[in-house]
Length: 63
Image (cartoon, rainbow, N blue to C red; front, side, top):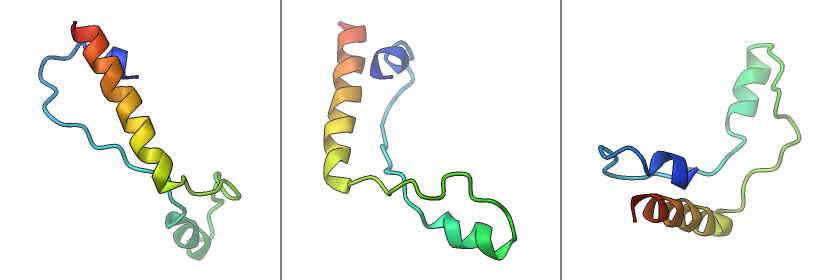
């Protein structure tokens, strides 16, 4: 992903957000099926590793 977005020279910042299950209750209250039900929220500690991998890909593309 980082290698792909590294081609865009207008990229100024990168926000990497973890998946969370906050929307599950909202879907339930609306009577809608939550397609990601049962998928656990991402461990926030892993988020920094994921962001680093993306940034490394951006740097590789731009070098």
